[in-house]
Amino acid sequence: MADLKKYLIIFLVAACSIVASATAASTTGSVSANDGIYQTHVTSVQLDPEVFFPYETGTITVELTNSGNQTVTLSQPNILDSHVAVSNGDAFNTNIRLGPGSTMTYPFLVKVSGEEGTYFPIFTVSTVEAGSISYPFKLEVDSKQLSAKVADKPDNFAIGKKDTVNLSLSNSRNGALTDIVITPEGTGFTVSPLEKFIPSLDSGTSQMIPFQVTPDQASVLTFHVEYRNGNNDHTVDTVLPLNIGEDKTAAVPVINNIVLASSGSSYTLTGDVNNAGITDAKSMVLTVLPPAKPVEPYAEYAIGSLASDDFSSFTLTFMTTDLSSIPVQITWKDADGNSFSTVKNLDLRSTSGSGSTSARTGSSSSTSGTTGSTAARTATAGGPPGGGSIFGFGGSRGNGMSSFYPVIGLGIVIVVGIILWMKRKWIVSKLKKR
Image (cartoon, rainbow, N blue to C red; front, top):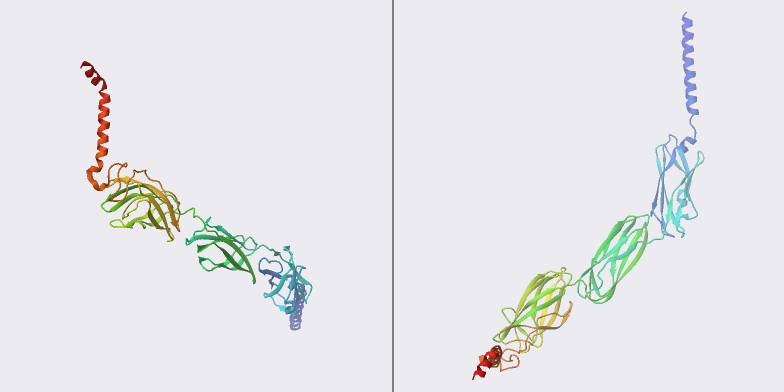
């Protein structure tokens, strides 16, 4: 009985060994060398630049990952396409063993052809174990440049006046452009900023860049734009003529409703100044120029800020021996602090002694500003202080009331004539009775 138990134990141990060996053999037989290849795949393809210019160089980076449980030996990676030339293929002559869970990166230095279009090159790599891996990807070649255009500018520039010019950059390519540098170039003007840097401009986006331009003369401003597509440098220029002319948006001072009064040896000039322009006038000041001599209390008159389509009254006091042309200078500033001035020549030959009267405005001249005619009331004749006459009768104003006798006599004659005309029937009847 003991021998029977011994043989039974030996049998059971042998049976278990046979089953274990069979199981191990079955498991080993289920693993194939191709399993590693099937589970090694391309996980990403990165192009720099994203979109090539014709004949441009760049980098195509292919990443492979072995997600299987067997090591795979890789060799002879390449990119196959007639529009793409690989320049560093010799760098990958060594076989690479890619273990389970590992990643391999192939950076290809390439140059594309000069033909525009969308292509699908194939990345390929061989394996020692069996077969090869192939993966197609998209590559685009486009010659469109970065667009740089002047989007906003004044119709005309004024010498010494600062205006805003907006340069618009637009990227209509399918890839981003980087390291954009804008440099204004030229002479005969000052510009701010002197340079503008934009790190990146994504595909299908645009950006507006303002520049402050103050011309000293008629000239040409060139916006020189440098940018990069990948590691490739490109440039584009935009030309802006700085035409000098009338500023259509400037303030336009107009003097009207002028009244002149004399007092002793000086004159007092009152009136209104109107802003007939588009923009506001800041820090406006009025004064007279030679041959007139400004005197106190109103040698200068400060208006302050005068809005568009608004007006303000003013008073100026001055001395002169000739009222044929009194230059009135108007100075002001715009919102940017640029200074302007204009001179209005007022014809004040029509005065009336020590009383007040209205006068005509003459032609005007301007410096760094606008010109135009002004309107005023029409007056009677007269002259400077101490002389002149009224209606051409009598002597000078220095003769007192005697200078008014002819006028008074004429008035009496007219009144008597009117009375006689109204009473003519009564007078005729009285004469007949006699």
